[in-house]
Image 1 (cartoon, rainbow, N blue to C red):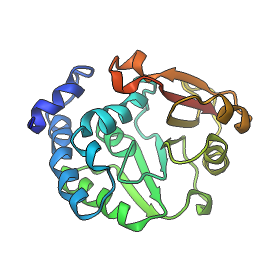
Image 2: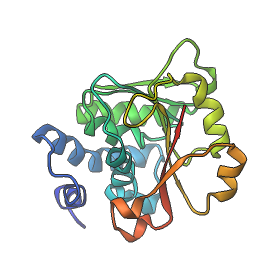
Image 3: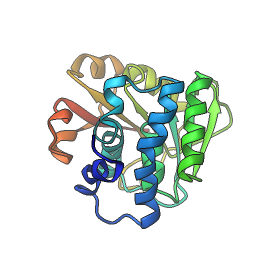
Image 4: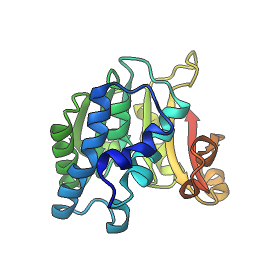
Length: 214
């Protein structure tokens, strides 16, 4: 079994400008998720052994297309055990992430991981995205939570509109498979980036980062 630093080599293969604190935080995720997943199952048993490929690096594909500015406010819709929000919060320590999920026990894991890894730029809320009122975010992120049309319906009211950015404000989500029908039904014309072009790993075949501008 590989140690956390050995597994972390997969992340450092593609990113080389982390601080010592960021490296320590990424390294801490392995033991924290293994411990908490045994208590509250948020990651499948087969995935927990490949956490850096299947979850951490997958989440960081968003960082490869989006250079979020300090102070940017991002909502992670249906964050589950904290993906993609937790790895992105480590990657962007000066960006504010708000992680929401309708299942409280999943947020308990997120809270414990943030405390254990010393992640300070995450807030959490036990709610559905559609029930959030009087708050606006620069971007919404999500990973395979729901069809694109639903994600857009939930996120659009929460998004500020700004097309002056290199990456216009909007929804950024991680999805896989044949998405033609799902995109058609959404009525959107999103930009799609195959993740295997960012990280040429077999696992990312037919997986995409999708960006729909507000």
